[in-house]
Image (cartoon, rainbow, N blue to C red; front, side):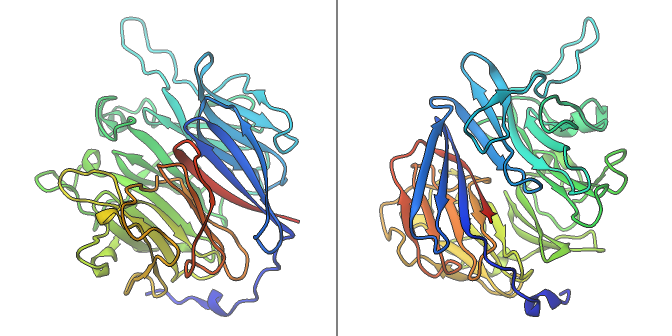
Length: 389
């Protein structure tokens, strides 16, 4: 296990307020909390009736928002606000695949699924992942987008991506776009299906990171096509460590190694280590949280036995603790999507997750106690948290 000097590092000063950004099947909302995270002011709905897959605040300026939306009249697009959501403008050129040569069948973006701001030294650059799998980049703050790198049309990557009929019920996706905070040219992304991939040269070339990962029994683990990462997160306090919630378990990767270690085997056997989201502590690389779901053969995508819980580790996955105080104890059959869990940077850390039944839950004490702050929302697709001065 890598050392973690950040555990004893100076704590960051708490921001004056916390904003929770909630993207749903029928629109988006912003929840503005006070310093104590007890009182919340609601801002929304935005884009009522439209699918919003991801809503992200740019940490580099603290006011620009991008929303990845799929509207009934405009189709898949991106909206941009530079005044914290008071007004919105549609992207002049949203992500779109290059036109196919005459006589060949091209691909069409069904939805922009994931948004990631680039490194701080690239203040106007954003990345986007789509369904079907595609990687795009904007260099003007999200106004115009273009295919990024060569993977969208690389025959090898196209084979790994499969077809639009493959993958998850909502279609195959490129997600978990990660920028190393030490190096703007060091990038990661994941594809469901298609595996996890890394670039050390700003996206010119990519290498699959598959070692140690399991696949569904009967399939070839050496073929990226059969790998289904659900969510990959880089540790803010130690960028040489990544955690992954996969279709086939929970994993940790400590660089410079390129082999994932399955840390979910220490989860209770009756619960298992299958789920969608994973969140990492902002200052402690040994601490992470997941929300398991029923991973039995029929894949109902519900909480195990109808009793949802967050599980946390404080030793890099060697042990896990069930954290369910305040959560429903029975007959709660929701689950949490891969983007729908987040952490703030306060001390103690606040955790937030949204459910498929439209509830937003939060904990002010790193998961020890939970309370529901929103009920009766549409199905929640994504949750992000930002701290503001």
